Image 1 (cartoon, rainbow, N blue to C red):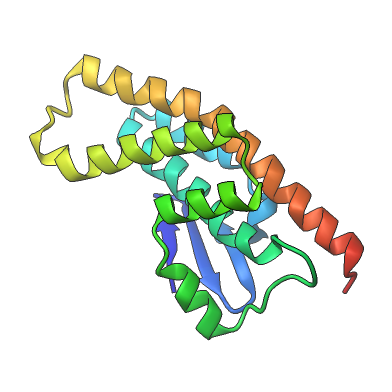
Image 2: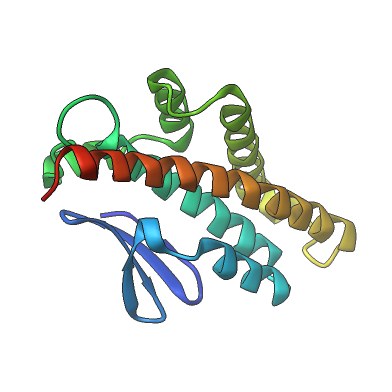
Length: 170
């Protein structure tokens, strides 16, 4: 079971799909107000947390979108299938979504850029001066640019859910 955690937020992958627990009030992932949660981290001066939260939401949208991709009914959400999907790295999911046609070139490149920056930062964080204003401003710019990318990704994800819901009503 994977999840994303911030001070106030947790996304969990379970047999019932992704659910968001924001301040202990569960909401569906496709309905979460990720922009407000990420902006709150930026406003509180937690740029690194905002970047990791942004990346976490993007990864969660990509992961869950796999279940709504392709033809036919939404994919099997058994524990076995979810465990296999949990093992996919973010860069692999980005490529899969590009191959499936879920991401256009621009969105593919934007998500890949954010993923690469987040990975570089995560692996080199020990070497950074976290109080350096230039460093913090660079992260803040990446997050602000990334919010539109996340919005575009979220819109595609929601559209896929809506299409499958119309094709296969519960």
